Length: 511
Image (tube, rainbow, N blue to C red; front, side, top):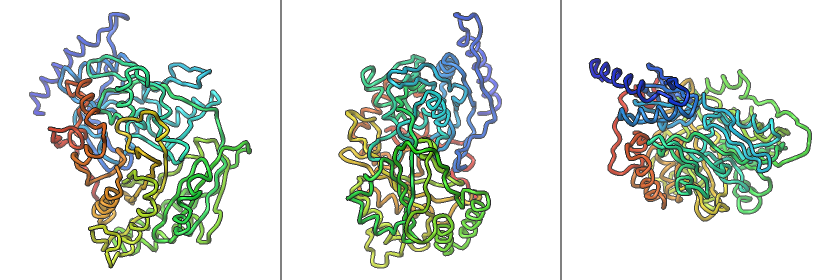
């Protein structure tokens, strides 16, 4: 925006704020907490953007003022929490809204174990509020840094065939539309909007309140053991995923081994987790430094990964640590440092095929047994590849854009690539194109919040039977396009190409 246009816009905005912010009920002006010159980046510093305004509302009236003003000024709104998503879903050159100041408990229902909270509350804060009441979250992903609204907007999941995604614990929500109207939604009230908003991608409005369904507080006794990967595949269809309530597997392609982490509820007293080699400062720095050198000498990567595996877990098969922790502490983990994350949901029964074909490809695939039409030459990956599960088939009606499988349990394969000291690993794009080709070949769908790079708008429409309904509802509740951000235009909204975000100086950080 040139200086004269910017000056005119500031004058128009100032006049509009003065008019719209007057609160007749209190006889005062509603605060408009805006700042300029904010540089936004994702947690992993994979994407950057410079929003025109960063807005930090602290009340429902302030949120309504922002929405009404954006509509009148022709601005789009992107809501951001921790920015933990490594893709550019939270980037914008227009208005960015952060709800960290809108994160209080609103009410509680002791009989139903339900807590209504403002949507900016982070998951670790929510866990703390539940713990005060002797309650807990029934399920959790690997981190608690996200806001509750952000976690459900991108369909966060944990790892358990006895649970689905985090959205299953949302008994109701309130969403503010681009008109400034707030609607309460649940399975029985505004049901279509409720099921669309459970995975909203920020495109329907601003979710302001969540009614969270808790469970009685519990502790988890967990253990982990080193197992040769072929044994994992042998027990895949027997008891691998059913022997405990929570199960996750870390697959190490260069070590021929996997680590199986399993946990069950217990009455045992708390017992701290064992020391983690790369959880400490020296181990973490050593690992990152070794990975940094391997970006210059990629052939060192398998040696680095095997060494780190032996330091963290030991080489021999068998138990390698256990603990008893509060549920939310046991289920979370250390993400270490900056990373790309590419995670896909495929049918659980396709898991052994996916792992075997990817292993063959990573081993060189001289006879093209994997069927992956990309050369593996020069490809070296980081470990572990995370293997997790969920089952949402117990739900009567699921979120419209839920990427988990429709007819059976879901396997989530998570191909993480670290960015040591913010340096991209070599050939990361070719690896991800190959990985995504395999996932598509097995009927997969990408996690909305991750670094998928080859999925087209047409493919997304083919993946989701309810996509047409979601887009039509989105357009109906937001006819002004206040929440039609560039990410949605590029990936989902038909007839929209998505303008380049000019304020993004580096879409992928390069050093």
